[in-house]
Length: 122
Length: 111
Image (cartoon, each protein chain N blue to C red):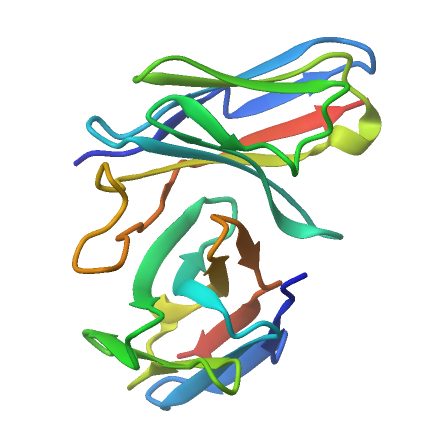
């Protein structure tokens, strides 16, 4: 049963500390998404990778957030320095988009979500 | 900017009822629309994905329809069960690879 895994599941830290969240996409998936979910803002897309290359990170605060894919089996989201307003649940999702982009004229892109990392910054 | 709205925000129905969840979007130039389910404390589970050229998709007791011109999608759940209780979110992908999520409809199916 292939699943997206995320670590840690919970993180409590103090303001100013560095936080690193990790995601293992489903083996064979070539697309990885990072989302943030809060009660106030709902679900927001932070960053989006295809074949390990960042396609869109416009939703991510650049001054403190960074997202990388060191290899095809690991995606990381780092916050440095963390602030109380970063408290949220961070989800990673992966999917499979055929290389070249199109199948029958349209892309197939179902997203599979991980369980999330619940972050609390004090 | 695309805006996705889901109405109602919460819905409570007795078991066995058929029900409809609504999703509307402001820009009809979408690439696809996806319905998700989220259980408390969990991630999202994809239910149905409708490409922009399609009108509907079905999976078991679920049927999702898409009317791009009017900016609407509905998720129909037949013969609801207590296990269907969850928050249902719709998400629109535009032609620039951006995703926009609605705020969800929290469904409670009472035994």
